[in-house]
Length: 455
Image (tube, rainbow, N blue to C red; front, side, top):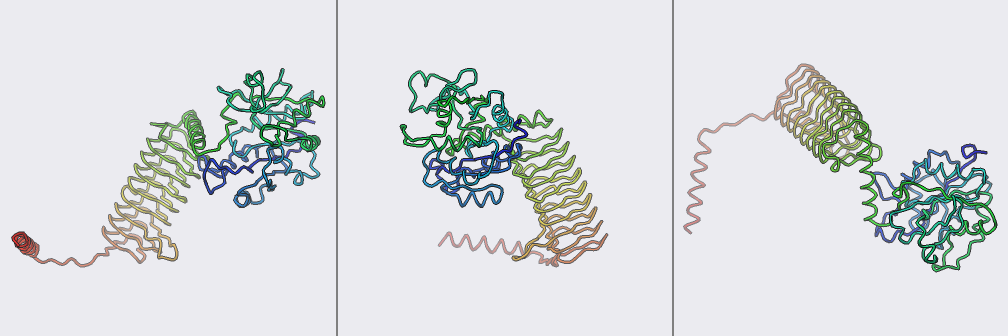
């Protein structure tokens, strides 16, 4: 039976305390590109179609339960006695399961689905290994455990602290990831001891036990050491973010987008860019952004949860919050903020405007300083602006309110009632004029100031 025809279970180890992260948030829930590192891993593994998903938790398991919901079974490791002991905690959740088991680490989030498939395919090779280990060859092997192998067949696995000089000279390192047959995995785990430098139950020992029994075990090597880099501190989290962003920027440019200063553009895990998009320096994309072809995003914009149709222009210094929808050839200018608002085709809001809970019709013009007053202190209300409407500068549209098509709201108006199609609405206090008053005021104040200095 091939790997694709064999049932698959995932065991994701996430029981570490993450003390080096120095955080109240569980280590594996810290985000990279706006997505928790655990979710990055589960998304890749999800491409394999696993029947069962078990996350082994310890410290902070309540946070994992809340984050995962019913998408995985939580198995608890308490106390934490090593990686072999951690995998053993999944035994109950895998009762009755007969198939392949992929063992992953939640703090190693960027293992590709292709690499996982290669491990499973190797498990079903003609020599039928009972365990397949994912190896890698870093520039500096440091204190990684070593994989001693000949032509891909493992002779021995050894932790660095227990390795002799000849074994430490081996450059093939153990990533910790494994694929195993379920009918052999737990029987091997039951035989693992803790007679080692750390006094822990090491997962790699199942390989040594199997090899001692005369059973085949194999290693598959990734050609990208970054793929199996673990994240244990804020520094390593930042380094992982930097690597991810660098790859995403390259992908964006390869796909036809222009990034004027790539190193200053920050993407989210799900950012979608069309062709011939131009992104100027210092632009940040949060999650949930979809951008069509021929869009220009000027410098210093923050965009999250927004949809931009073709020909749209944004910024500089604009902020698009979740629910912002910009339709074809609409324009948002400098210091404009949108939230849960639709800007119709060809509509413009060029300066210093807030559009919240609003619907703006095609070719409408929103003057500088306009605010949709959407919140009354308890509830949000909607503003609807019709096609070709003109909203004068420094206007306040007090929702709920509707401005009709072709209507004009005069500058400086505070509109709290609907405006009909084609109507002019002027809402201003009467101007009071007092000739000469300012001159007399200045004279009196200058005299008073002079007298104060003499005193």
